[in-house]
Image 1: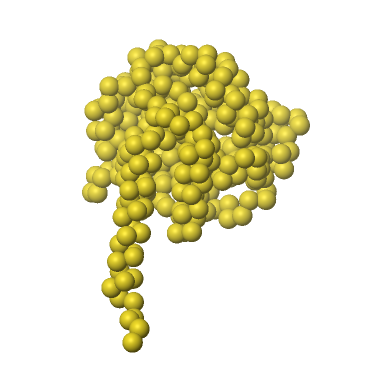
Image 2: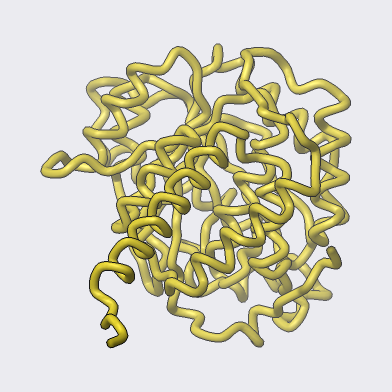
Length: 320
């Protein structure tokens, strides 16, 4: 399947981001959902049968790194470097298997590329989702994501769920996917409560590569206030996010396109491109989603079709 590209200046409905790492309201139509599922099933049948990957605690090996680089070349990120992937493994190992990864996030593409990246690794990655659709909520739980609990603040839910895990890399963005957002303090309180270090990573849609910070930020001390952290470490974190050109620059909190342009003389907004969502759905299906999840989806689809058939037979007008 060839890689279809979408330019940021050509994309329609720039403000309509259905999913995000922090706010994942479902913006799919029924047709879009069915079409996406059909593409996922098609690729799952076609590719890599039996690859129900279990996530073990060990370093990313060279075969995994090469697989990731090959996959990302297929979706157009031809300049992803092995050293960037080794940094992720190094940070995770150094953190004893518990780490927060602050990700540059401005569109659905980042969510899917994140799944594609960590679907190849043996790093148990999770994130918080807020799907309104119960089917998507169940799907998210099945692939290891944290979902909203009714009446419980999101930050508390995340902390409680991560405390149950022996090892994890928790992906989070600093704000919801929307224009003119301010940084949300939730990430600080999560890192402080769990005493986990933080790194910055993301996908650069101009350079067509990845970004992983060299440094990591130590867990905030228990007596440190967010206001104190905001004036020091948070400014440094935002500086690192500034090094990553997002697909939709206006939707990345703290990103200054002019400042990025000043550091890249050949920058052209028309060169900010991303693989189509169809291409990413196809790749995620073949590389990231375990067989058990597909079995669950197919069972649900069959049950829904049977219910629809029964309703039709019961209530359709009978011919005289």
